[in-house]
Amino acid sequence: MKSFDIRTKIYFGDNALDRLVDLPYKKALIITDPFVAKSGMLQMITYRLNDGYTEFEVFSDVVPDPPIEKISIGVKAMLEYDPDVVIAIGGGSAIDSAKSIREFATRASNKQTALIAIPTTSGTGSEVTSFAVVSDPSKDIKYPLVSDSMLPTEAILDADLVKSVPANVTADTGMDVLTHAIEAYVSINNNEFSAALAEKAIEICGTFLLRSYLDNNDTHARKKMHVASCLAGLAFNSASLGLNHGIAHAIGAKFHIPHGRSNAMLLPHIIEYNSGINKHSKSQKEYPKCVEKYVNIAKLLGVNNFNEITTVRALVSWIQFMLKEMNIPVSVSQCGVDRTTYFNAIDSMAEKALADACTATNPRVPSKAEVVQILEHLYE
Ligand SMILES: [Fe+2]
Image 1: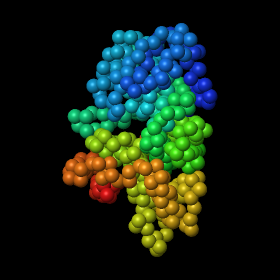
Image 2: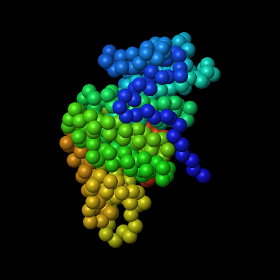
Image 3: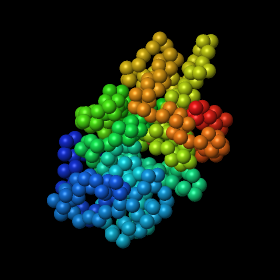
Image 4: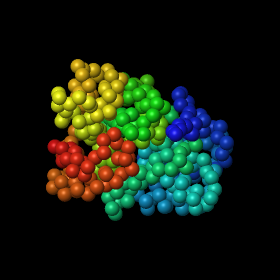
């Protein structure tokens, strides 16, 4: 038996932030990072809370790749302030921090608190997922925490917040959206509902990702990518992800390469590995099952070719074209990582990638030697 539900109420479209004027809550803890706190974005939230007579306090101690120590400081702040709603505003790190802080504070106090997630990048989809990633820097590990109790109560998608996102962040986070949708689509846990959401997200990425990268005044493209990010989040919340994310978490924890960039560099390698196109021979009668899914993805992106294998090759080329057009590095060496340091870390990164919860739903079960090989190819 399978089930599917969307528990997070989503507000979107023009002036979606006006939802904050009508909140049924009286005391809000805003969780964000120092950049958002100093930018005009925080004021876009706080003046609406003032209009709605919602009292608030700001916790702005969020850092990228949130470590466990910062989460416990946030839990202490939440228990002291005792809000009836937590408002997370920022990228994936802010929303994941807020989800983790609220989760542990709820366990400590036994008091239910609402969570409103407001993304300021179009990437993680964290506003609608039960996942949060926290880091343990002492062990170079990123842990995906998974619990339905971490699902935000509400998500607000207001594209005014993504207007001034720099081009390189648009590129990285946009490729994260595409990777979420593709991994959810080929996941062994995929279903008709997650597939419908992933297909729409892929279609939007195909039309609007490059546009939103090339022109940050293209508000229509940015609005579309903001919705695509959420659609892909809903898709992987149901179907989960795959080896691409398993390896990206390991690389990100060790070398602090932005999450979306790690995913983007890996995506061509993972599609080649999952579909087996590099080893496919003409005498082989059957393709791996995921090949058919990659062919569907290619068609959604307007990519087609003679047969299944050449179409998957064309999909890989399309992704490589996107990386080039958006100036995303195609290898770890281009990210400035020292060769010896990287190769010395491969064995331990491969083990962490295999143990990562995302890897469990990959369409092909990887061996350690295969993950090592992917990591080796990723360097050059
Ligand atoms: Fe991701």
